Image (cartoon, rainbow, N blue to C red; front, side, top):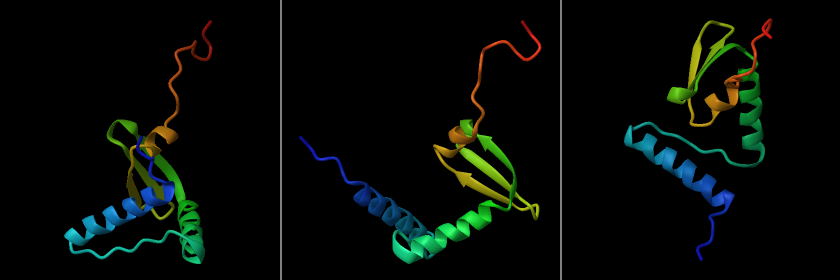
Length: 98
């Protein structure tokens, strides 16, 4: 029976893969995974997210577009996020019917 990789090793593998892909594009990347450095990055991300004034989630293509208060757009490619943000489809009676 094979052992399931730990969450920590999965995170290390994912960050390493991203850094290696960026290196192929001759763009330097760095990974922040713990401690004060991660807390700092999370705080910055929370401030950045607070500037969002509109969101376009497109689950079919795995993309979310954030519109910020300065009119700029940020695009996030993700297999999970668009589905988390999309409004669930219901097949019940519409408002005012029935």
